[in-house]
Length: 281
Image 1 (cartoon, rainbow, N blue to C red):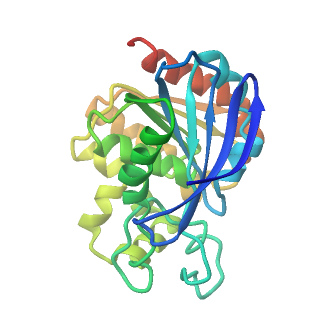
Image 2 (cartoon, helix red, strand yellow):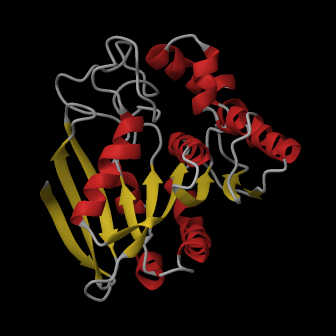
Image 3 (cartoon, one colour):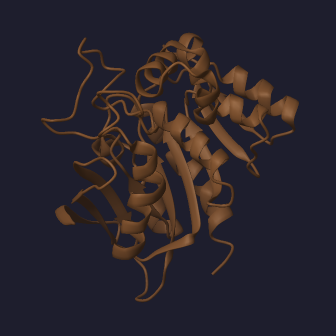
């Protein structure tokens, strides 16, 4: 692992790191913030998954999480959203919602993406092992959050990995990718047209099929230009209500899809996670 950047912030340390990934067959870059702490103490971990076109850098530079993480004693890890490199296939049409920056947190099975686009395995298995080895992370106290495509990733990982994450939250997530253009395009391209496979990566379908979390928090801006066509939080709210899955869905007036929105409510989400992570040694 190479440390590309290291900065002191709020008494803790912000790092940007690169390592060779066996999951993707490429170098991968991620950021990690470690708050001030006593030697030998292991800290709870919050994973943050980013959205379409993003890398680790978007939330690292614009997410405004470090003060809250320092006060709450939380490590925050922000992976990239796809493999990258000269040999990594991109969308031949050059669209922003497929290929580089748009891994959709699945393991691709279709050519030419299957060789490198293995973001589920990378985030579920490989990167946690690296974080546990290199940082003072208490892997018994993990939670996960994300924005847009990353909100989709956070919800599906939490709902499928029973017991791994104590909490999950999202900003403007894609909750029903099987029912919206972004998700349908990605799933058809990466994993084919078997809609039963799609259900394993669809938060609405997972709740319908019995997956549960103790609670879920979602913030969604009502001025989000993607709200009606791509995000559809009402589908998730209805599925949760039918299933008895606890959900706090907050529609925030005037807010759009940007990091101005995410950064406004970041501390709220981190406090919500800390309430569920910091009750045990």
